[in-house]
Image (tube, rainbow, N blue to C red; front, side, top):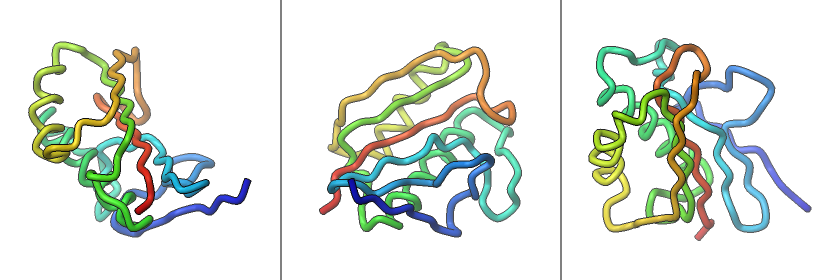
Length: 127
């Protein structure tokens, strides 16, 4: 299977041995994004809402590196450390996704990298 790595300076550099995203067989598979600000390389922690927005902004830029956007997303996986934030995630997620309602999984995780409270990955179909 032919595949290529995607990279953008507008999203955080990976914190481990992985790519921001991989393009394969007409799909973009993003790595999980946490709320690292790509300009400061620090985690956004002032509020859960801003943390979630930063995650989705990071994903917006990673998808754009593959000429895709939120309208092209077909599946989303969300990990959060406390499911009591579920409704907050839904409200912010909906503002980013608009009318697109891809398949989605939301899982409570005991811990996430660098102390993040939310991490999201996506699969998008390339136009």
